[in-house]
Image (cartoon, rainbow, N blue to C red):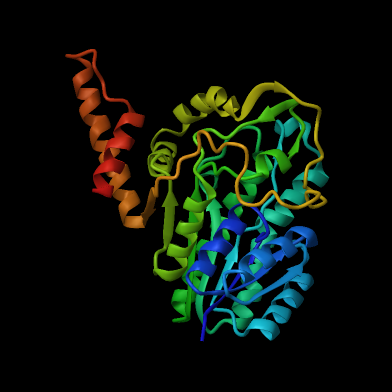
Amino acid sequence: MPQIVVITGGSAGIGRAAARAFAAKGYDVGLIARGPERLAEAKAELEATGVRVHTVSADVADAEAIEAAAAEIETALGPVDVWVNNAMATIYSPIKGVDAAEVKRVTEVTYLGAVNGTLTALRRMKAGTIVQVSSMLSWRAIPLQGPYCGAKFALRGFTESLRAELIHDRSKVHLTMVHLPAINTPQFDWARNKTGQQTQAPGPYQPEVAADAIVFAATHRRRDVFVGSSTPPGILAARLAPGLVDRALAKKGYDQLSDTPIPPSDGNLFEPAPGGQQAARGRFDAEANSRRDIYSSRQADMVAAGLLLVGAVSLSMLATSPLVIGPAVAARAVGRALRG
């Protein structure tokens, strides 16, 4: 029998790419998202590949709705083998510019939505995998997305607590997190934006790379999976020199904004993005990276350790040579070495 995967936020962006990747592996697919039009498009696309698909329009912030959606998908397709918590919402604004309702909504979707999905999956799964789609921002917060970063930090804490409990209970349910860099999805244009400037994706990867990482996490027992050659070194830097990173992000963190002025946008925070057709990719195809930079926990440690070693050598060279290997160069070198 084919395995069954459920993906929240599955009608667009990373979720849509992941749905395609699982379908290519022969999985039957359950999709949960708010917009019925885009869900219908995703269903037609996936069914054309020969897999069974069932979609439910629901808001992940509504625990009862997610429970009902899971029951409906199980009735249509069968018991769930993989549950992917992917739905998210963010807002681009300095923290002093957001209100309590906006912070609450980001938290309800990005954190509590994943909690609701996890609890629903645990009530149904005796074995299988729950995948939390997370971010490098669950390890190091950045300016202009404070509520989103807070929600991702909370999700990592919740996941680590639950993981220890599952180990204690000798559960056959595996819990894993996928930590992503910037991804070329429509979210940059769909998110609520109060800055007055168009957003941009710094060094993005294509959503298909994220989808491959999600499928890998679902089919290999790894604690964490990291995407992007800069993700492990960035996490290491945040641990070793948080103050230095604070000051760097005070400048570089604002690179999320372009020089193009736009009027403030309500975005998809409280309502789904209108219309359909715009699926997995956003507007950054020209600069988005398709390289499969996917690292398990052990490989990420090797990347970080390699960077630390190169950094130590670089510091020792500082007194005798003006040529110092920078961290970005080191990260690329270690990444290339790991890929062979």
